[in-house]
Length: 217
Image (tube, rainbow, N blue to C red; front, side, top):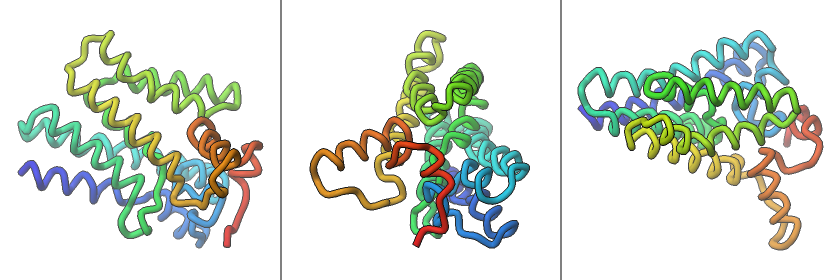
């Protein structure tokens, strides 16, 4: 049963609502627009602003359902959290989109809604502040990075802190990998590009230059 729940988590996570929204509503492949990320940001910028709500809710559900199912079936909190994290892996690296997906923040929020609601509120508050300051990507990184500490001070089970750490690792890995976008040759420019990816989730300075470009050849 545990293996089935894990497999279910990945397959559910791999259903990219952002990609489907782009195909169904605009006939475009979001991997060729903006940052190349198959995400709510891409939907907002290149498909339809209203569709972000539907995409976001679906992506939250992708994290919440496997986590809740693992707990409901009595598989234990660690395995339930593993199923949720595997859904994030599926969202970030869907097998049928050449492993080019989103960043997984909404799916992580779904996990937190089930086991750590305060973590969800914390992330939303940090993202709201980041949006006001126009540093949403940096705020998202700070929010995820502080989740393990927040879970510790609120005395959540150790499994929750470990899962929050897993969220941070997945976030860092996906930002640096950036759907396998090419990097400059080794040297200062490559280091600068990697730092921008980590902190700002893009390879260039101005955000609009990165998020609004397309189609990419």
